Length: 381
Length: 253
Image (cartoon, rainbow over all chains, first blue to last red; front, side, top):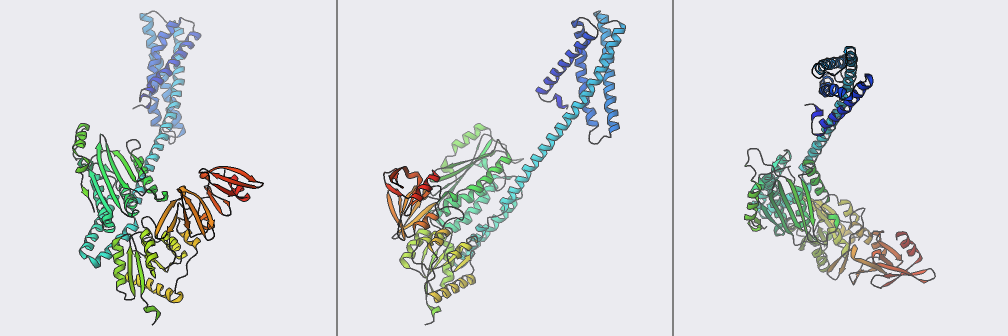
């Protein structure tokens, strides 16, 4: 579709422009051959409107002869040819219109006067069409620059997303070292537990590799990864680490960027459990609210903990990923009280193709009411 | 009796039970090592080291409340120290505070035996290991390139953690420093200069040879005699301000 006809503003502006051109044409005709202004308007107004639409055809002329690749001679030939043709067509239409006006309303100049009018129309037509071609070349250049910019932005967002994915796919090595140390300890005291731990660690590694390589994963898969992680950490921390899951079934089907909550869970274990003598409960909650999936990760914190042990970098990464995903529909809020730390994540609720479609909002609200806080799985550890 | 058959009394400090169990298992194979206790956090470690005076401490770095370096900063008599951690980035700091060895997790039996050999060599050579300077210990106990965020004071077997925001002033008392916070005064086994070196100079000013002041506690300054001023604190307490101290205060305010 022609770019000048897109949207609501552009066609209006285009018409206003042609109103001006029409007024100019009327002025020229009155000055050139004195006559009543009304006669000049009756002659020029319909012709101007018709030529306004003819001038739009310059778009296709310009597109067929791109400035960068068309040889100069062919370019001149094509544009001038188009301008002369447009002028001739317009003059022809003007002759017919003048004949009609003269026959029906008996207005208009005599024969030599008519010929002079047609000469003016032809000249104006050629000049206006040529200008239209120039304007369209500008328009094309502007649009392609904007397209290029948009493409660059899109590729930057993609690159950033890939980079973050790669970053996340890099496992926290200390988690691995500590887990291996635990396995080594269990090998002596409880070989069966050591085997279970190997299994968990294997599952965790496999899942984290396969999720990290994908663009979107079901939230249930993210949860499965988090569960393996927490189970391994429970071996390390024992009763100090408790987990409280409150995830609605509808939330599990939603798609999220892979390894989105993993850094939040790791932070929660570090600050809520590892840094506290008495340990704590890591709470994971997820639900659908209208068109959004809301995920909460919460942990207790030590009020006396120095700020340097804050949640800085991991959180910022998650925030950037969400911004790249959808600047308006996705976001992250942090609620920090002296003894608790809570991250609230929001992403647009999108389900897998072929999955069960989203329940309407009313149903979702009813569902929320039916699942009190206590109904989620409670694991203590 | 040859020195290397002397029984080493060892303390295990780690917040993870499996990690402690592993070290205990390895050590139990060595008849010349006796594990006297296990501690699950820094506070316990400080208390137990004071009570049991072990020859060797196997010390984790990242623990709740107090990390391994802070533990060393708080104890008076220094046992031999072997750090046991999953993090390799503290190795340099560990040797700055004269650790006998630095063992990475997962811990291998042979590697731990090597560390024990190091400890035996040290104990045989000097009896008691050379303690690093308090300044080196204090520097190791804080993150590199940053100011301290809290001061640790040991009182008997109790450890007080004083966030620097609640620190009002410090007075030099020979080799000790009297630290005022929350209406109480704590005595720390460190000189005023050593403590002041770790404090943010934008918040704490050495107003006098013997005094460091948290500028937030300052109400006003009064001329006391020619060239001599007195700082009136918000709680009414008056502290002397030397000429150099006044210049430092002016620069800041």
